[in-house]
Length: 78
Image (cartoon, rainbow, N blue to C red; front, side):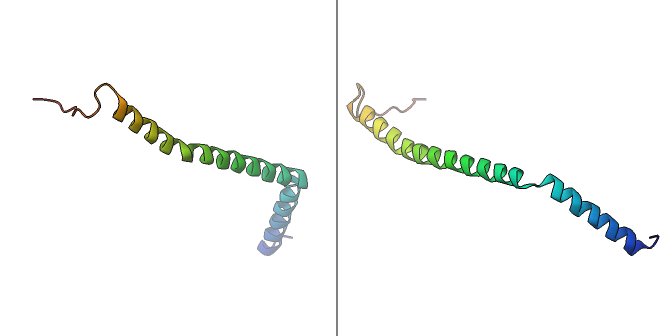
């Protein structure tokens, strides 16, 4: 067991055993569930945030057109 290939094979087997211990079924399921929930939150947030700019533009337009200074130019004078 002094050859390089034997030591490399032993090292590989140790890594495989460690991977099998660290990545069990419950851990993978938990990671997948977390990712699914995070994507669901981002999808819902995107559907809400996606409509907000249009809503703000409409409100801003209504306020600008019906406000006290509607139609006046607000340009700075120098």
